[in-house]
Amino acid sequence: MAVQICFLLSWALFCSTAMLLAIFLKHRKGCGKSDRKLPPGEMGLPWIGETAYFYRSQRGNQLFEEFVQPRVAKYGKIFKTRLLGSPTIIVNGAEANRFFLSNEFKLVISSWPTTSVQLMGINSIMEKQGEQHRFLREIIATSLGPAGLEILVPKICDSVQLYLDKNWNVRDEISLFHSAKALTFTIVLVCLLGLNFEPGTLSTFERVLEGVFAAPVSFPGSKLSRAKKARREIKEMLIKVVREKRKEMESGLVGDERLLFTRFVSGMIRGEISEEEVIDNVVLLVFAAHDTTSFAIAMTFKMLAEHPDCHYLLLQEHDDIMSRRRPGENLTLEDTKKMKYTWQVARESMRLFPPIFGSFRKAIADIEYEGFTIPKGWKVLWTTYGTHYNEEYFKDPLTFNPRRFEEPIPPYAYLPFGGGPRICAGNQLAKLNILIFIHYVVTRYNWSLLCPDEQITMDPLPFPSHGMPIKVSLKSS
Image (cartoon, rainbow, N blue to C red; front, side):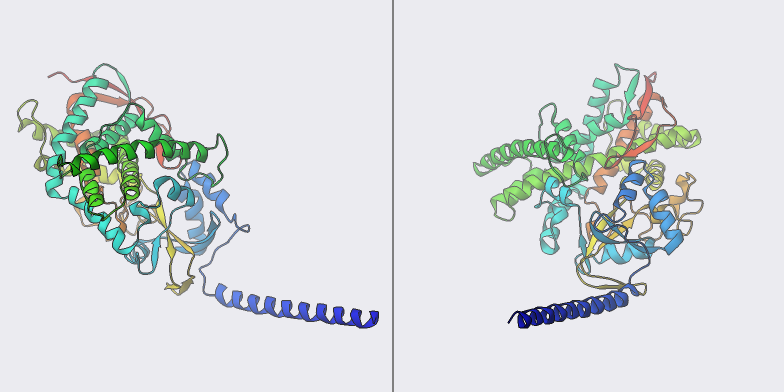
């Protein structure tokens, strides 16, 4: 009996081993077949992949130079890696940008890290797909169309002048970057949304931002833990504001229907969007509208300081606009349209210093591209630097030359605001913020950089490491 049991156990072990070996060989054969279609590259360690190299390069604002470029030189414009636990394909070039960005909702969908989704909100437009995304985008776009922008310009002018009078006229040293952040934060809340906020609200939003790309590990004192606490504070504040606004509107006190916040609450009353969607999209808009814009403003001034000939031409443009207006009279939307050279300077600054590195997409089907297969579920990362720093699209790409924007730029080669269906809905607001801020600074103040060699760092978005301190003095009338 014992012999029979041993025999049966041995046979079972043999059969199991044979079956596992067959599965292994089949899997290996399948992997080999799949690997021949995948782009070249290294996946790195299991799960971790090359994330450590990615983050190390990011912290020094050398993500493209130290992580992407060496791999492009080794493997070509499209290569595979593993980042943040996901197999990832990194693509470079205008054609790749066009293919993946224009195929949003068809072949790929936006894919943000888990921590970003938790903090921005699962009901924000960045997480919406198809019709839900289009509906929310239409609400935002309506407030930022020509009629909405016409109304916004004098409000932005008042906000900028009030801030400068209060904070710049009484000091000789200013943090340009933090001034731009405070102003753009005020503009999106007060001018675009029509919301008043308590002192300290900006710092609460800042604590949320610190955790957007943090490791998905939350323990007391961690970045993510602090960010979640700040997010709960913001949610409590906005719930109160949303419900008060809804009560006013349902009692007949509609207010200004052109304000984006009013449009959101109107949609909520009609049952088109939920309270959670209103809150999450307000949070997302505040982040999207103020942090990247402030960096663009700071880098524009950095370039003006380094290129006095450009500063001279830009100042002439603004002096001419100012000479056509009565003293104290606000700018109009038409005035901003005359700031053509100023916008060339700003665009060239954003080409050299993109406010975003790029963004992730996720394949929702197997994708055939450039002779390779990108499997369903894999991530795709496109980069602004992949075209902004490419001689194929921009002659002498590392040279600051605003006049290059007098000629047409190849589609999907210049993407400081992204592209495709998810192009930044607030790009026109960002443009107004940049142009109007520049106008009032260059026409009112003499200024100079105090740290000309200041380094740019990322945590998680790029920013000047010292806040870009400048020396200012009022110009004589």
